[in-house]
Image 1 (tube, rainbow, N blue to C red):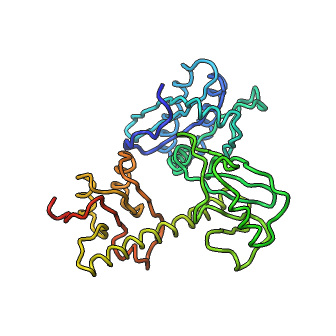
Image 2: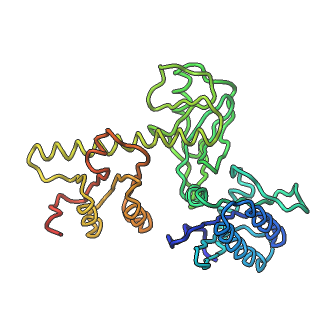
Image 3: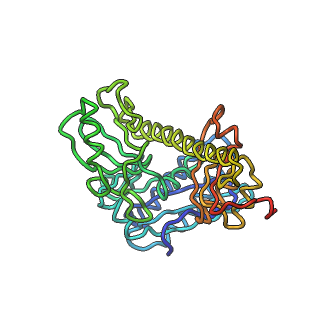
Amino acid sequence: MAAAASPASAGGDLLVVVLCNGLDATGLTEVLNGLKSESKKIGSHKRRELFWEAYGALISKAGSLQGSVNAMLLCRAVPDGGNTAEVVDLTKRQRGLIGGGGVEILGRKLRPQVDPVTKSWAMAWSEKEAQPALDDLLHGEPCIYVTTDTVFVSTRLKRVMCQSQSGSLKTVKEIEKLRSELSPDKPLRSVAFAGHEPPSINGYNFILAGTPNPGDLLPKTVGYINSISANEIYDYFLLRRNDHLVGEAEKLIAQMLSDVGKGVLPLISASSKKDAAVAYKNGLMKRVFVHESMAKFVNRVQQDGQVEISVIRGNVDGTLFAQYGSIVFEQYYRVDLHTFS
Protein backbone atom coordinates (compact mmCIF):
# COMPACT_ATOMS: atom_id res chain seq x y z
CA MET A 1 0.00 0.00 0.00
CA ALA A 2 1.00 3.62 -0.43
CA ALA A 3 2.95 5.62 2.13
CA ALA A 4 0.91 7.70 4.56
CA ALA A 5 -0.33 10.93 3.01
CA SER A 6 -3.16 13.38 3.52
CA PRO A 7 -6.44 12.03 2.18
CA ALA A 8 -8.18 13.75 -0.65
CA SER A 9 -10.32 16.65 0.45
CA ALA A 10 -13.48 14.76 -0.33
CA GLY A 11 -16.63 16.11 1.22
CA GLY A 12 -17.67 14.30 4.35
CA ASP A 13 -19.52 14.99 7.55
CA LEU A 14 -17.35 12.82 9.77
CA LEU A 15 -13.67 11.95 9.62
CA VAL A 16 -12.21 9.21 11.81
CA VAL A 17 -8.44 8.73 11.99
CA VAL A 18 -6.87 5.73 13.72
CA LEU A 19 -3.11 5.30 14.13
CA CYS A 20 -2.10 1.70 14.83
CA ASN A 21 1.32 0.81 16.20
CA GLY A 22 1.87 -2.93 16.06
CA LEU A 23 -1.46 -4.42 17.15
CA ASP A 24 -2.55 -7.52 15.27
CA ALA A 25 -5.88 -7.63 13.46
CA THR A 26 -7.67 -9.18 16.45
CA GLY A 27 -6.38 -6.57 18.89
CA LEU A 28 -7.11 -3.71 16.51
CA THR A 29 -10.62 -5.01 15.87
CA GLU A 30 -11.26 -5.16 19.63
CA VAL A 31 -10.10 -1.56 20.02
CA LEU A 32 -12.32 -0.41 17.14
CA ASN A 33 -15.31 -2.26 18.59
CA GLY A 34 -14.67 -0.49 21.90
CA LEU A 35 -14.66 2.89 20.15
CA LYS A 36 -17.84 1.95 18.33
CA SER A 37 -19.51 1.09 21.65
CA GLU A 38 -18.37 4.39 23.16
CA SER A 39 -20.14 6.24 20.36
CA LYS A 40 -23.48 5.08 21.86
CA LYS A 41 -23.10 7.99 24.29
CA ILE A 42 -23.41 10.54 21.48
CA GLY A 43 -26.67 12.43 21.89
CA SER A 44 -27.80 12.77 18.28
CA HIS A 45 -29.19 9.64 16.62
CA LYS A 46 -28.00 10.74 13.18
CA ARG A 47 -24.55 11.41 14.56
CA ARG A 48 -24.44 7.96 16.20
CA GLU A 49 -25.36 6.40 12.88
CA LEU A 50 -22.41 8.13 11.19
CA PHE A 51 -20.00 6.88 13.87
CA TRP A 52 -21.37 3.33 13.61
CA GLU A 53 -20.98 3.40 9.83
CA ALA A 54 -17.43 4.74 10.09
CA TYR A 55 -16.27 2.26 12.74
CA GLY A 56 -18.09 -0.56 10.99
CA ALA A 57 -16.18 0.19 7.80
CA LEU A 58 -12.86 0.35 9.67
CA ILE A 59 -13.59 -2.91 11.51
CA SER A 60 -14.23 -4.57 8.15
CA LYS A 61 -10.88 -3.27 6.88
CA ALA A 62 -9.05 -4.36 10.04
CA GLY A 63 -10.39 -7.90 9.82
CA SER A 64 -8.60 -8.52 6.53
CA LEU A 65 -5.16 -7.39 7.74
CA GLN A 66 -2.32 -9.80 8.45
CA GLY A 67 0.41 -9.76 11.10
CA SER A 68 1.33 -6.64 13.05
CA VAL A 69 -0.56 -3.61 11.79
CA ASN A 70 1.47 -0.42 11.41
CA ALA A 71 -0.86 1.88 9.57
CA MET A 72 -3.30 4.76 9.55
CA LEU A 73 -6.93 3.82 9.11
CA LEU A 74 -9.06 6.62 7.69
CA CYS A 75 -12.79 6.82 7.14
CA ARG A 76 -15.04 9.60 5.90
CA ALA A 77 -18.73 9.02 6.53
CA VAL A 78 -21.45 11.19 5.00
CA PRO A 79 -25.09 11.59 6.05
CA ASP A 80 -26.53 9.77 3.01
CA GLY A 81 -24.97 6.53 4.24
CA GLY A 82 -21.88 6.47 2.06
CA ASN A 83 -18.38 6.16 3.42
CA THR A 84 -14.83 5.79 2.18
CA ALA A 85 -12.47 3.76 4.33
CA GLU A 86 -8.82 3.04 3.63
CA VAL A 87 -5.75 1.56 5.28
CA VAL A 88 -2.54 3.49 4.63
CA ASP A 89 0.60 1.62 5.61
CA LEU A 90 3.20 3.55 7.57
CA THR A 91 6.54 3.90 5.88
CA LYS A 92 9.64 2.26 7.30
CA ARG A 93 10.67 5.63 8.72
CA GLN A 94 7.28 6.23 10.35
CA ARG A 95 7.24 2.75 11.91
CA GLY A 96 10.72 3.33 13.27
CA LEU A 97 9.89 6.72 14.75
CA ILE A 98 6.90 5.60 16.80
CA GLY A 99 7.87 1.99 17.33
CA GLY A 100 11.29 2.46 18.86
CA GLY A 101 12.82 5.65 17.56
CA GLY A 102 12.15 7.61 20.71
CA VAL A 103 9.32 9.76 19.34
CA GLU A 104 6.38 9.79 21.74
CA ILE A 105 2.87 10.16 20.33
CA LEU A 106 0.98 12.18 22.93
CA GLY A 107 -2.54 11.23 23.89
CA ARG A 108 -4.72 8.33 24.94
CA LYS A 109 -3.26 4.94 23.98
CA LEU A 110 -5.83 2.21 23.30
CA ARG A 111 -4.98 -1.46 23.94
CA PRO A 112 -7.03 -4.67 23.83
CA GLN A 113 -8.31 -5.91 27.20
CA VAL A 114 -6.70 -9.32 26.64
CA ASP A 115 -3.26 -7.66 26.71
CA PRO A 116 -3.55 -4.26 28.45
CA VAL A 117 0.23 -3.93 29.04
CA THR A 118 1.37 -4.61 25.49
CA LYS A 119 3.77 -2.09 23.99
CA SER A 120 1.55 -2.04 20.90
CA TRP A 121 -1.32 0.43 20.81
CA ALA A 122 -3.76 2.42 18.71
CA MET A 123 -4.91 6.03 18.95
CA ALA A 124 -8.05 7.55 17.48
CA TRP A 125 -9.34 11.00 16.61
CA SER A 126 -12.73 12.05 15.28
CA GLU A 127 -14.96 15.07 14.78
CA LYS A 128 -13.04 18.38 14.97
CA GLU A 129 -9.92 16.69 16.33
CA ALA A 130 -9.42 14.38 13.36
CA GLN A 131 -8.13 16.66 10.58
CA PRO A 132 -5.86 18.71 12.90
CA ALA A 133 -4.44 15.45 14.28
CA LEU A 134 -3.76 14.13 10.78
CA ASP A 135 -2.17 17.42 9.74
CA ASP A 136 -0.01 17.45 12.86
CA LEU A 137 1.19 13.88 12.39
CA LEU A 138 2.05 14.37 8.72
CA HIS A 139 3.08 18.02 8.49
CA GLY A 140 3.18 19.64 11.95
CA GLU A 141 5.93 22.25 12.39
CA PRO A 142 7.91 21.51 15.58
CA CYS A 143 8.93 23.85 18.34
CA ILE A 144 11.97 23.50 20.60
CA TYR A 145 11.21 23.88 24.29
CA VAL A 146 13.35 23.67 27.41
CA THR A 147 12.06 22.63 30.82
CA THR A 148 14.07 22.70 34.05
CA ASP A 149 15.86 19.49 33.05
CA THR A 150 15.20 18.61 29.39
CA VAL A 151 15.31 19.93 25.82
CA PHE A 152 12.41 18.67 23.67
CA VAL A 153 11.43 18.92 20.02
CA SER A 154 7.66 18.72 19.78
CA THR A 155 4.51 19.27 17.77
CA ARG A 156 1.13 18.96 19.46
CA LEU A 157 1.15 15.16 19.11
CA LYS A 158 4.79 14.18 18.49
CA ARG A 159 7.57 14.75 20.99
CA VAL A 160 11.16 13.60 21.37
CA MET A 161 13.68 14.21 24.14
CA CYS A 162 16.92 15.65 22.78
CA GLN A 163 19.10 16.56 25.72
CA SER A 164 19.11 16.50 29.51
CA GLN A 165 19.82 19.68 31.44
CA SER A 166 21.72 19.87 34.72
CA GLY A 167 19.36 22.50 36.09
CA SER A 168 17.26 25.58 35.37
CA LEU A 169 18.63 28.35 33.21
CA LYS A 170 18.91 31.34 35.53
CA THR A 171 20.36 34.12 33.40
CA VAL A 172 19.85 35.48 29.91
CA LYS A 173 23.49 34.68 29.19
CA GLU A 174 22.90 30.99 30.04
CA ILE A 175 19.77 30.95 27.91
CA GLU A 176 21.49 32.51 24.91
CA LYS A 177 24.43 30.13 25.28
CA LEU A 178 22.16 27.07 25.19
CA ARG A 179 20.19 28.49 22.27
CA SER A 180 23.40 29.00 20.28
CA GLU A 181 24.48 25.39 20.95
CA LEU A 182 21.29 23.71 19.68
CA SER A 183 21.65 22.61 16.06
CA PRO A 184 19.97 20.07 13.74
CA ASP A 185 20.96 16.57 14.90
CA LYS A 186 23.24 18.16 17.50
CA PRO A 187 21.14 17.47 19.54
CA LEU A 188 17.85 18.54 17.91
CA ARG A 189 16.10 15.46 16.55
CA SER A 190 13.54 15.07 13.78
CA VAL A 191 9.91 14.19 14.47
CA ALA A 192 8.91 14.55 10.81
CA PHE A 193 6.89 11.73 9.24
CA ALA A 194 7.81 12.67 5.67
CA GLY A 195 11.60 12.57 5.98
CA HIS A 196 14.57 13.35 8.19
CA GLU A 197 14.02 17.03 9.06
CA PRO A 198 15.68 18.00 12.35
CA PRO A 199 14.62 21.58 13.17
CA SER A 200 16.80 24.66 13.34
CA ILE A 201 16.38 27.46 15.85
CA ASN A 202 14.61 30.47 14.33
CA GLY A 203 13.07 33.69 15.56
CA TYR A 204 9.97 32.16 17.15
CA ASN A 205 10.37 28.43 17.86
CA PHE A 206 12.61 28.45 20.97
CA ILE A 207 10.61 28.41 24.23
CA LEU A 208 11.37 28.17 27.95
CA ALA A 209 8.62 26.11 29.61
CA GLY A 210 7.93 25.89 33.33
CA THR A 211 11.33 27.26 34.26
CA PRO A 212 11.82 30.16 36.71
CA ASN A 213 10.46 33.34 35.12
CA PRO A 214 13.40 35.25 33.62
CA GLY A 215 11.44 38.50 33.65
CA ASP A 216 11.47 41.20 30.98
CA LEU A 217 15.09 40.74 29.96
CA LEU A 218 14.45 37.96 27.45
CA PRO A 219 15.06 38.80 23.79
CA LYS A 220 12.11 38.45 21.42
CA THR A 221 13.72 35.35 19.95
CA VAL A 222 13.07 33.48 23.21
CA GLY A 223 9.54 32.65 24.35
CA TYR A 224 8.43 31.90 27.89
CA ILE A 225 5.40 30.04 29.26
CA ASN A 226 4.77 29.02 32.87
CA SER A 227 3.58 25.53 31.94
CA ILE A 228 4.94 22.12 30.98
CA SER A 229 1.70 21.01 29.29
CA ALA A 230 2.56 19.96 25.73
CA ASN A 231 -0.79 21.32 24.50
CA GLU A 232 -0.34 24.71 26.16
CA ILE A 233 3.26 24.98 24.98
CA TYR A 234 2.25 24.23 21.39
CA ASP A 235 -0.64 26.72 21.53
CA TYR A 236 1.84 29.35 22.70
CA PHE A 237 4.26 28.37 19.92
CA LEU A 238 1.51 28.81 17.32
CA LEU A 239 0.78 32.31 18.66
CA ARG A 240 4.47 33.21 18.36
CA ARG A 241 4.59 31.71 14.88
CA ASN A 242 1.51 33.65 13.84
CA ASP A 243 2.95 36.95 15.08
CA HIS A 244 6.16 36.19 13.19
CA LEU A 245 4.31 35.43 9.95
CA VAL A 246 2.22 38.60 10.21
CA GLY A 247 5.46 40.54 10.65
CA GLU A 248 7.02 38.87 7.59
CA ALA A 249 3.91 39.59 5.52
CA GLU A 250 3.99 43.22 6.57
CA LYS A 251 7.65 43.49 5.51
CA LEU A 252 6.53 42.49 2.01
CA ILE A 253 3.76 45.09 2.11
CA ALA A 254 6.31 47.74 3.08
CA GLN A 255 8.48 46.64 0.14
CA MET A 256 5.46 46.92 -2.18
CA LEU A 257 4.63 50.43 -0.94
CA SER A 258 8.25 51.48 -1.36
CA ASP A 259 8.25 50.30 -5.00
CA VAL A 260 4.97 52.10 -5.67
CA GLY A 261 6.39 55.27 -4.14
CA LYS A 262 9.38 55.06 -6.47
CA GLY A 263 7.16 54.49 -9.50
CA VAL A 264 8.51 50.95 -9.94
CA LEU A 265 6.27 48.01 -10.86
CA PRO A 266 6.11 46.08 -7.56
CA LEU A 267 7.39 42.54 -7.14
CA ILE A 268 4.87 42.20 -4.29
CA SER A 269 1.08 42.21 -4.59
CA ALA A 270 -1.48 42.47 -1.82
CA SER A 271 -5.22 42.66 -1.13
CA SER A 272 -6.53 41.18 -4.38
CA LYS A 273 -7.76 37.57 -4.43
CA LYS A 274 -8.21 37.93 -8.19
CA ASP A 275 -4.59 38.94 -8.69
CA ALA A 276 -3.49 36.04 -6.49
CA ALA A 277 -5.50 33.60 -8.60
CA VAL A 278 -4.02 35.02 -11.82
CA ALA A 279 -0.45 34.85 -10.49
CA TYR A 280 -0.93 31.32 -9.23
CA LYS A 281 -2.57 30.06 -12.42
CA ASN A 282 0.23 31.47 -14.57
CA GLY A 283 3.11 30.18 -12.45
CA LEU A 284 4.20 33.67 -11.37
CA MET A 285 3.71 33.24 -7.62
CA LYS A 286 6.87 32.53 -5.61
CA ARG A 287 5.50 32.64 -2.05
CA VAL A 288 2.32 33.75 -0.35
CA PHE A 289 1.11 34.78 3.10
CA VAL A 290 -2.62 34.18 3.41
CA HIS A 291 -5.23 34.03 6.15
CA GLU A 292 -6.82 30.69 6.95
CA SER A 293 -10.27 32.09 6.10
CA MET A 294 -9.37 31.70 2.39
CA ALA A 295 -9.61 27.95 2.82
CA LYS A 296 -10.28 27.06 -0.82
CA PHE A 297 -7.14 28.83 -2.02
CA VAL A 298 -5.07 27.48 0.89
CA ASN A 299 -6.14 23.89 0.21
CA ARG A 300 -5.37 24.16 -3.49
CA VAL A 301 -1.88 25.60 -2.97
CA GLN A 302 -1.04 23.10 -0.22
CA GLN A 303 -2.19 20.15 -2.30
CA ASP A 304 -0.27 21.27 -5.40
CA GLY A 305 2.89 21.91 -3.37
CA GLN A 306 4.38 24.24 -6.00
CA VAL A 307 4.38 27.51 -4.01
CA GLU A 308 5.78 28.34 -0.58
CA ILE A 309 2.71 29.14 1.53
CA SER A 310 2.45 30.55 5.05
CA VAL A 311 -1.02 30.32 6.58
CA ILE A 312 -1.83 32.97 9.18
CA ARG A 313 -4.52 31.99 11.66
CA GLY A 314 -6.88 33.62 14.13
CA ASN A 315 -7.77 37.26 14.65
CA VAL A 316 -5.59 39.67 12.67
CA ASP A 317 -7.84 42.74 13.04
CA GLY A 318 -5.89 45.98 13.32
CA THR A 319 -2.81 44.69 11.50
CA LEU A 320 -1.45 46.05 8.24
CA PHE A 321 -1.83 42.53 6.88
CA ALA A 322 -5.60 42.69 7.51
CA GLN A 323 -5.83 46.18 5.99
CA TYR A 324 -4.36 44.79 2.77
CA GLY A 325 -6.90 41.98 2.41
CA SER A 326 -5.12 39.27 4.43
CA ILE A 327 -3.24 38.00 1.39
CA VAL A 328 0.23 39.08 0.27
CA PHE A 329 2.39 37.35 -2.31
CA GLU A 330 5.75 37.70 -4.00
CA GLN A 331 6.15 37.12 -7.74
CA TYR A 332 9.11 35.72 -9.64
CA TYR A 333 9.05 38.68 -12.04
CA ARG A 334 7.86 42.26 -12.09
CA VAL A 335 4.78 41.95 -14.29
CA ASP A 336 1.44 43.69 -14.55
CA LEU A 337 -1.00 40.94 -13.57
CA HIS A 338 -3.89 42.77 -15.21
CA THR A 339 -2.42 41.91 -18.62
CA PHE A 340 -3.10 38.23 -17.82
CA SER A 341 -6.75 38.73 -16.86
